[in-house]
Amino acid sequence: MDYIKKEMGNYNLYFIKTTKFKTINLFVNLKRQSTKEDEVYCSILRRLLTYATDDYHTIDELSRAGMALYGPSVRFTVPRFGMDRSFILNSSFVNEKYTEEGMNEKSINYVLSHLWNPYIVDGAFDEEIFSLCVHEYVEKMRNIKDDPEGYAAERIWEEMDIYPIGELNFSECADFALTLTKEDLYEYYLSLFEKDCLDIFVTGDFDYDEMTRIIEENVKGNFNPSYKSREIKQRPRKEKKIIDYSDTEQSKLSIGLRYVDLTEFERKYVSLVYNSVLGGGWNSKLNMVVREENSLCYYIYAQRKIPFNISIINSGIDKNDVDKAIELIRQQMELMKIDVSESDIQRVKDTYNNALTQIEDNQGSITDNVVSEVLADTDSIEERRINMNKVTCEDVMNMASKVYLDTIYLLKGGE
Image 1: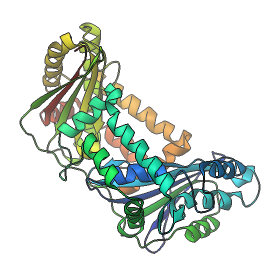
Image 2 (image 1 turned 180 degrees about the horizontal axis):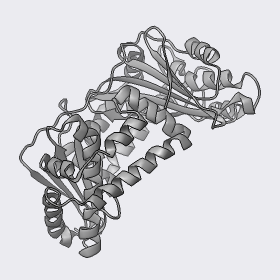
Image 3 (image 1 turned 30 degrees about the vertical axis):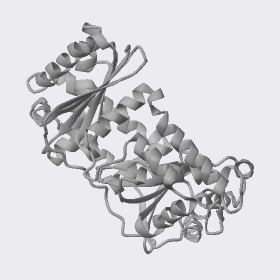
Image 4 (image 1 turned 90 degrees about the vertical axis):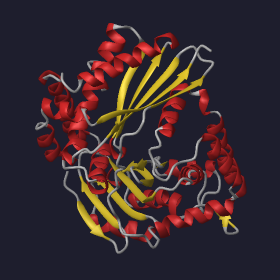
């Protein structure tokens, strides 16, 4: 996907021109190296910034103002990519070509005011809104076990010790949140515009000069130079098994795999094929053997987390079938070293190529694709298509020897 890059002094602006959609997509990415406390600060902050702005002090006022602008969406997310965390504002709003002149500027001013013009009282965030957001976050952390599948997914992540810097567990996150003041959070908020790098992406049909002016008038800060997200390298270690208990009938099994010493080609392409053949769909080896042939689980799938060089196998299972299921998973991982067929990888390639073809049919996917190229060193669509088609059975079987079973986590139900 073609795009135009504009260097705006200490941040970058990217324009992706397309006339296929009646909306404009705005994607603001603030990024820095992760710290253990980022999870708490950013999770509370992303809630708080959607409750009020300097112009609209309540969520009702904010909602009414948005309705007058044909309902621009405002969504904050805080993903982590390898060593780095991003604080993202994502918005979609109706192009003024389908409403009335001047609406693009009004919509962008409204959207960006959530980030650059929050509601501040006496040099800090509003006490009532701050307290509400802290309460919501603490309740979520303390009740996370009410979602067994989500809890197991978080616990395997924690037990695998993915981050070199370490991370806070659920209880520690809740406890740390309760120590924060509205002044602490405001100080962290201000640091976004001093310690982070900034990249802004705009996708749609618009005038470049006009869009540049509008964004430039809204953006303020002394940002650091932009850089590509850095992957986390893994190394093998002694396998471990952890068992927690739940009062649910179904058990949740999560198994963490580490990818070690992958080449760039293996990391970007071969690992995707490996993960898909092993556990990426209804025709995967794990689903066919563990679920279909042996009826040992309700579901089973593998998710590749490429910035971290890991995959995680998740399964819902009866507590009496856990050992047998683990044995079969180990067997299928061993078979991946010697038994991968042309039909296995062709199925993955077909799915992958279809997904690439569909990117241009979705405005959000177009934006995400360029963001990935610019900030995560992903290849272009055509390069990805060519390189994926180069993957062979031998590539996948060779890479299977670089995959290590690291952690088995069981949230055991029926106790």
